[in-house]
Image (tube, rainbow, N blue to C red):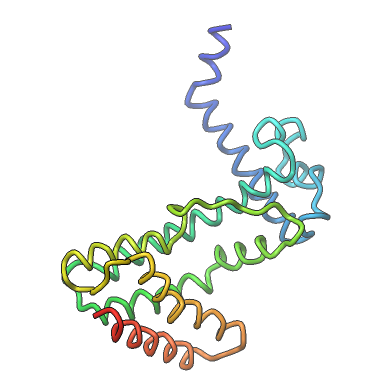
Length: 206
């Protein structure tokens, strides 16, 4: 028994296991996007991943669990992109207006057009699919609130409610721009919305 457990924990076996998990999630994402949640079958996912159904169940369980893991993987990429934008554009000592505009523009021009964001929106638009439960700390807005709290401590931003400030900022910039994108607005119109939203935010918080 102990020898078997030790073998299962070898680096080679871990790499093979991780490769199978990645292949399953790649296949699941492709099938959910192509067929929709209800029509995508476990058999089709396993066949595209090149694994047995038993292997797939051993790694993830039933279809709903596989779907949630696929959505979580894409969401993690978006969170990482938002975190990098916050760290790099809202850095200490940078002019606040310049940093906020650069951050919002980066989310609009880099994150929204990305394949990860498109995939996330398409997957989560499935009404019949399980809902992804996110804790507060999983959301980019929470990360932005943390940065706003730091800016408030430095005296750069005027707020004693950074969570609310982050929600206001998102509503005035990112959410407006997303709605405009969905309505067919061009890049010039989008960037004007972003910059005017930043100006409105700063009138309230600086």
